Image (cartoon, rainbow, N blue to C red):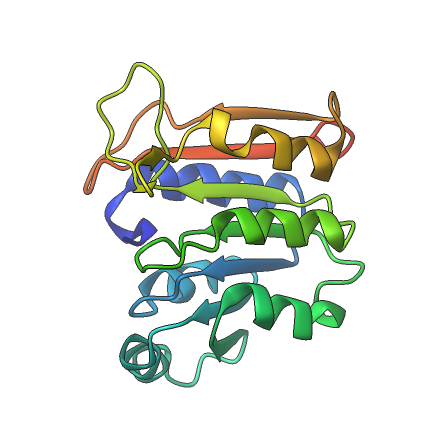
Length: 186
């Protein structure tokens, strides 16, 4: 699901991009390209989709928007192969590729750590404590903080980050977690 239907999620991402001078948004899970198009109004976008049919529809939907680079394939492989595009930039990762037999979320987080990046990370479809927002699970394990805690600590260091959840949601009413480096907080 994209941010188009959730004005609260969109406003928070827009604020983070502006406050932190984000130069590139990396979206995993392009789906039909609506979120990539919306993100392109803020900054440059690199988006990955593993499903060929969705990728082709997204490329058609995105059209000639110059500040979007679309890739077909596994997000981890694409990001590893194109790591030079990420170097030296203020980054925001929008991790939303969780629909198939293989869920790349943990591998995406591990790659961010491996590359030594300290981006803003937004994980969509995340369990928000105390809220009735929708969230995803993989192999019976909810997308919650316990699932990602160790990986996030590897990225930022044990006390080098803060995180928070969306407090409101409309449209699809899905949860999200926002993770930021304390050093880079503005």
